Length: 272
Image (cartoon, rainbow, N blue to C red; front, side, top):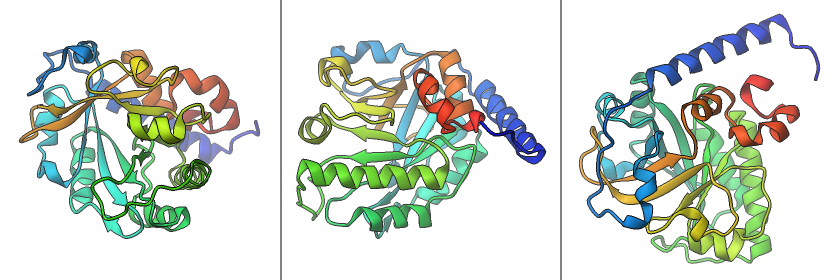
């Protein structure tokens, strides 16, 4: 690894200090709130320490100070979709979550009726570069609820996915996370190898019971969750580890279990 210039070292030290403060401020040991339709298959998630939410315009205005005080440690928010849509609440959510000291990140919803190049350019144009933000997320599902009904071949879908994650990493400087559900994973991602961490949706059982050997960094365990600061129901999620792993994730932008591989490649924040 080449020697870093003094300016780079100072910038890195300042970033690490800022993220360490963010991690310390986010610690919370109070009770974890609820779920309107609890399922016993995901009981373990309720007691895991690093709880978070993912949001879009449907949640309206969120009180991020109340959310953080009530146990929410992180928020992922919808930013972009396809090549021409920005969630109307994205910038407001982004700015207010950051102001509240909430660990925050953006996700792009992939559509199968636009090229990957168009979608990558749209994400790059609309999502701010923020060194303190969480790694970006690429949301991979079939577009059941949209006008786009295309279903590309596995080879074509994988090619588009790899274009997107490469562009998102180049833009943000952090290894993107892949979010997916059981159907898309079975059809496209099963058996495929990625450097990217995974965020798995499983609302009636633990992920290993639905995704075979696929490891996960985040687990979306309910869509009927309730948390302080959010009116109505919200998707709830957990990070796989405890306080030490979470702090390392905030400091590096990488799942700690992948540091030995990605760190030497210069793809983790504090190791660049």
